[in-house]
Image 1 (cartoon, rainbow, N blue to C red):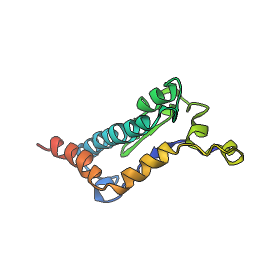
Image 2 (tube, helix red, strand yellow):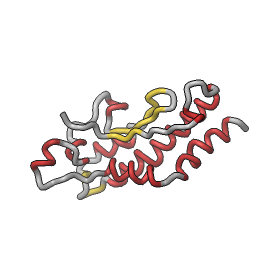
Image 3 (cartoon, rainbow, N blue to C red):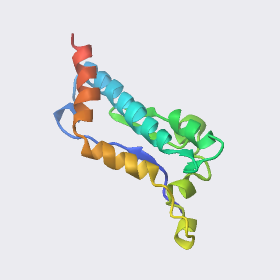
Length: 139
C-alpha cells in the first residue's frame, strides 16, 4: 500500500498538554490552521506549476482546499482527503511515493516533502502563527 501524501505537524511543550485552558487550546488551533493553510498548503500548491506536476490544476485546487483541523491541537493538509474524503488517486505518483515510482524513471516532485522540510527548518513560523493567535486571544 502506498504512503499517504500530506503533512502532519507535531508540536510539544506545556501549551500542547490536554489540561491547557480552553482559550489557549482554541487560540493554538487557530494558529495551527493558519500555519498549515498559509505555509503548508499554499507553498505545496505553488510548487505545482505547468510542467512540474500541474496539468489541469485539479490536484493544486485539492491541496489549496485541503487544510483542516482534525481535532484539538492537530491540523493537517493533504491532497483532498480532508475536503473530499479521499486524496486524489494520482497524488502519490506526483509526490513520488507510489510503488510505481520505484520502477519508473519518474521519481516524483516531492512537493509535500519539500514543504515539510521548509516548515521544520523555520522555527519562526510557530511564533508567527501560533504566538500571534495566542496574543490576539488574550488581549
